[in-house]
Length: 281
Image (cartoon, rainbow, N blue to C red; front, side):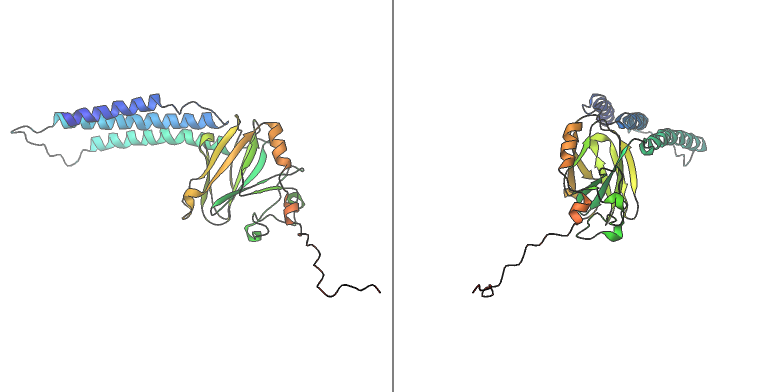
């Protein structure tokens, strides 16, 4: 009886925790609504299954508890029960997968006015590239990655000369502006994840993955790597700041372009060796 009661209390506590959780309904980005709706549908379906299974267990524990003289009925299989379970499981899985297909379509259907921002992952840091005055990102290639060109920007592409390069620093985005996030890794698998934005996507070496969103609230948010990428995985964190238009413009003007970073360093004149100074007679 005690075990059956504990199982019932687990169900009641789980439902109350879900209903009363304080982290619901805090939209911060445009994709928050439809992703959360999918999560809610998944929670209801899995929650109903969880409730039914645990309550059935509680019933069985109570109904078939030990009694003197009672004998168990052995039934090795039941085709009728198996058919019902297969059908119900198929319907439940389809109900969870179908909304995800629509959400995925929205997640990758980028508006025409979205600004492209490239995120480059490397053990164990985040770097970024934003379009310059021409509004276009130049091409890049992993084969071009070097200490002088850590993001592998193509120096022969004129569109890349004015690209803004942010290496191992914070990323800023303007509020209420759609952004297409291009994701690239130059070493191993990573995953760009901003929990508050409901934004998450794998980064596969040799591929460019992407998604889009519109930040709808200014603030500071943490960037995490959600794919085990080596011993420094837990420390692969970054910061994303959503600014007002004015603050974003001010920050952007303070950043360096690819052309500025790749320009040859100016070397000062060598000091004149001692004893070689010209003598004026």
